Image 1 (tube, rainbow, N blue to C red):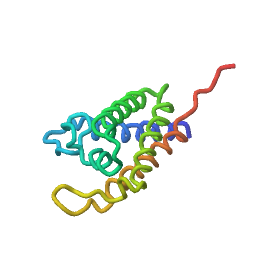
Image 2 (cartoon, one colour):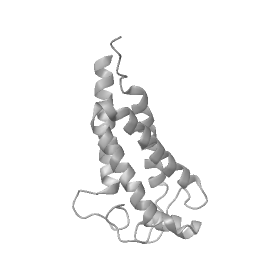
Image 3 (cartoon, rainbow, N blue to C red):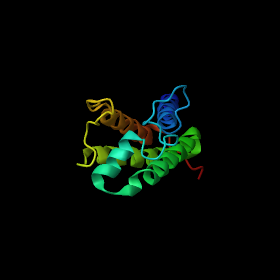
Image 4 (cartoon, rainbow, N blue to C red):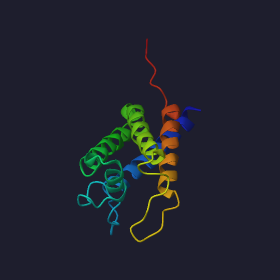
Length: 149
């Protein structure tokens, strides 16, 4: 059972790390403008620009976007090391839970309006719910260090 928990912990952590790197840094070639938190120009990020516009809180874009990106990178760094993985998973739950909560708010909604017209059909919301579930699962699957006393 312990081998399964370690393997599941590594797989879940790898999925969350990849997701956080993808939405903050987008290391793959040809990133799509409007979707990369730390590289988009101010006002260009689709999600945070919509939040700032509909809520009237100008701190969402770009300050909230940069803060969110840095917190997610910190969580990804903590997820790399098994000793801090549980704390990283807790930060991931908070970040992704906040994203789900904002999608359920009247400011954002479950479907995002795309710049080319139409909506994303709730895909962004579904991805956040999925990774929230993965981070919650990691909190329970990751083996707890036992004391030697």
